[in-house]
Image (cartoon, rainbow, N blue to C red; front, side, top):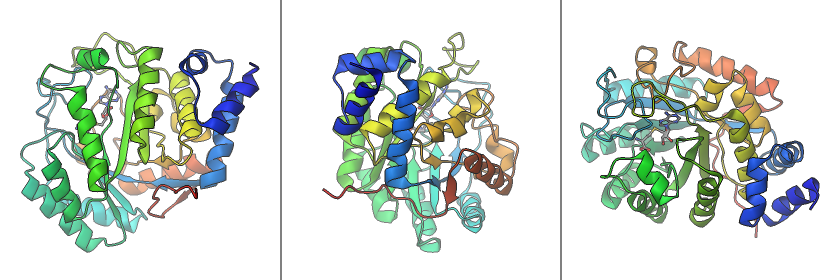
Length: 348
Ligand code: SAH
């Protein structure tokens, strides 16, 4: 099949057999057509709009020990912090003033924040910012906990599945974690009524094209509203310190493939993508991404939320970040909008 035909088939059918996907993922031959098709698909549905999410990294304590993550429990070099309810609310106030209408509360799995405390924080944000979406990203919880957060006013939840291949999952996580539970959490979240985001790291240790195809197949089953992918970036204080970073080229290619397979999805150009390349986020937008997630955490703690090394945007105030991002998005040919930015729905 000619290169362009393969991309046209992917665009029309939102799917390809494994062998064709493998070709697309492993070769740079299709990139030109692929990126063009992804960008025009995104423009068809979302125009030139880029949605912004204010990220509040409220704790870097974590009870888990994921081998890739810099805030894993056993990293004794990590200096730990927690934000109080008042500090979190102050981040939201500042964010609201800057035009953010989505707040993302992300953290390690930190038992200090009991369900009662999370519900208290969420309901206060809900009360003060009626017109905003509240997104949580707190890891794996029971269905009851997820339901309680939802009832308190949360609407969205981000939980990357990380890898949909069981042996690969085992290589990235200690024995007390399981892919089965991770998936179950995602289905529970959907069932409760959350807008759900999932995703994976690109170039994580032991990842192969076949595991990536399984990631895509899992996403087809889950049908998430949001899909977050970013390159794996090594952190020196983890068991994976000797592995190399994931590549930007592959991340961009996968963003484009995902845009064509999930045309209505919200896909962020992630901070990790901006970290491995100075123009990573701009290129991500051009490859089909339509969301950016600038940091609203207090500058004093930004460096401490170090999932990986050399993370960008750790020194600037929220307002500066917002300005910088505006320029970057414009330079890529798109524009930031302050709308709440729910996923578009297809008229079937
Ligand atoms: N505790 C929450 C939030 C995790 S941090 C949860 O379990 O969902 C958010 C994401 O950062 C993770 O899902 C993972 O995909 C990504 N991440 C972690 N370590 C990373 C690394 N070294 N390089 C790139 N991304 C990483």
